[in-house]
Image (cartoon, rainbow, N blue to C red; front, side, top):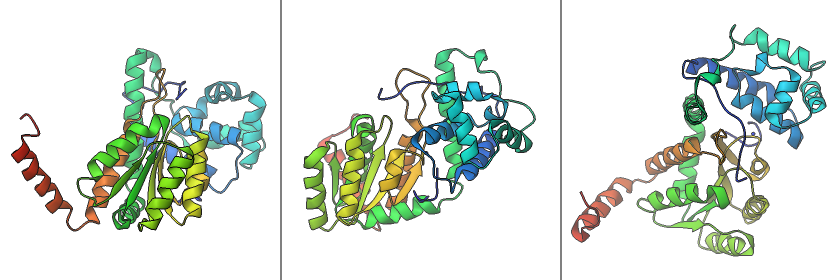
Length: 302
């Protein structure tokens, strides 16, 4: 999914709906919202509103402008200006449009669950939405080919995204001949990117999660200037890294707890590993070789 044509502490705020909500309803509502936002140049505040609407897609047609403003953490006039930016006379016109294409009833009351259950339900919805996005496998397949062809393959992840980058790099190293984890920013990261380019790298994979560090945007800008194709896994196609990514793959984070949860980005990373393996003819042989060595060393306790 191209960054030019798609949607978008270390993190806090918000909850999500109940278990009885239909996955198809939530996914189709989110897809309609994303289609509505595409092609519009939105300000950072407007992107924040759009992101909040996608996360609560089934509820949005039933929210007042004040409620939506509270959900997004913006002012009520900002919601009005957002609706106008989308081509509507105001927020009431936008809400009427959404109700015309939305299910007849709002989502189940999240009050039926405690805060911990709500966090789990929110992640389930994020995974369902990811499943609907993956119905079109072409963006992930393209990303897999790009990652497989890059020798070496730099993988960037800073702050909240460091664990996602480390997990991907750990498994990727079992099948890819040269994976280079970039887990520090600044000029050191730029030096390592330059070294990777000199060694023949063609693509950089980035995991970018909120809150988005400025140094991630700067590092990706440097990577593009160095000639690398940037593939990014981010929480939203509206994320700040979109403008410095060639291929952005969105996977929402959960925001119902004090710190964000990233089940969907982690799973998308594993999906990318699978797609990359499809582009590496010797991936299975490398895995089998590792298993033999691990058994000889008694590496794992069975």
